[in-house]
Image 1 (tube, rainbow over the protein chains, first blue to last red):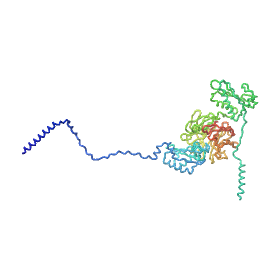
Image 2 (image 1 turned 45 degrees about the vertical axis):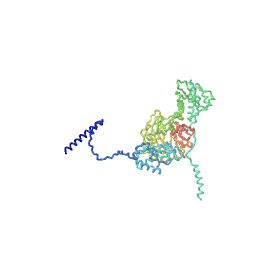
Image 3 (image 1 turned 90 degrees about the horizontal axis):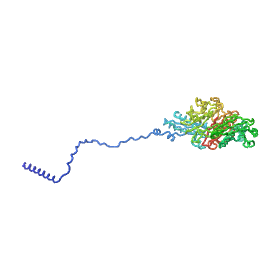
Image 4 (image 1 turned 90 degrees about the vertical axis):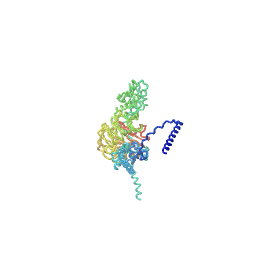
Length: 191
Length: 429
């Protein structure tokens, strides 16, 4: 019985083989043999997932007041005129009461920017004579220096000059112009 | 009731006192010195064949005539007088003719034949009464220098009569005509206005040296009002002080010293003195008040100056070493800018009354004060002519500040400048 099964299987295999040969002969295959499969290397398993983000550049910090100040030229600072001018009475050079708070504010500013060197210009109105006015302008600058000095500003940081009546602020010939022209003005000459 | 009765009497007494009280200011007009010398100045004789010599002769005649008229020493005879006598013949002068028309001096000018483009000018002075030749001078020059030649000739005439040269003197001043304050100089009559300094900084308050060769002035540079000396003929500038504010320079008439105001020490305006080169600086005033505007006496032994040590600006005199200070101005609350006359007997200064500045002259011998200017203006910075017969000063008489000249007695006011604004004059010695 066993022999019968083996022969029948063998017969079937031969038949099948013959049949398949006959089929191939009929369909002529022209495709080239497939290329050998690529050699696949074993990939390491990815364990962690990295989150991708663009690196953040450190933002410029807000500049300090000091830095803004230092970045400007003397001309720019003087144009802004952070130090207010003060005015004087006719023929006089003492510091008036209304000038004191102005000088106090100026002193605070000078304490904040303690490297600044200033020039105080003394000016007069046209109702004084040329020669005496130059001296009077100098006196006005000097009393302004003395007051700032009394508020703790080193006199080494202050220079004085007098223009007499040669540089009026207001060219008019009336009390308003004269009052404007009797002044001590501040100019930064070093920072 | 009682007060009411007394009050009118009180006012009356007060008025009487005010009227009787002698006033400090005495406004008088004086005609000083010798009467003017009558001088004949007939037309100049042209011998040159160059056609333009005729105009040169006319210009020379005009300038010399103007100079001598301005001198207050000579009085020119009216031209019409010359028609009464025989025409001038330089070879044979009829002195009796000239005497008959009351000439004391005869000036004969001739323009001889000259070579090239230069002209020749010859001037001769004759004493009419003595009938003799006194002095002669011959000049050769370009036509562009006619004014200088005429002024030199006129100065020679002044010198013969013992007077100081004035027509070749120069006035230095500050003007903003070219934008900012710079130094300029001009002839005594306002001609030949020439710029001396060239920069963007303010150049200010000039003063001649005694020999008329240098000018001290204040220049605003490097945030300072320093003192400098300029040689206007060489263009050299020497720094004297570049510290504090220094101004109002004044060379001593002997040529040795330079006084000025400065805040050199302690920031207070004081008067200092240095050598004429600006060396060896010494302080003369020591007080907390303002001391400024020095002006030397002609002997160079004393200095007049302004000080507010008494509360208001007044004129003082001190010895050249700073001692023996005495006040000379009284009767006003604001005096400045003293100018000591070349003869030494007077000091001119500015007095402010009700916002008006006028120039006054104090006679130091008689203590009389003359008000020289009378105008509703600001007349400032007087400076004497070398012969002391004229003063130059600045005034805003026409609105803008310009320079004017006036005679010692307040007559003959004439304007010298018109461009921009001009101020701070100093007349060379």
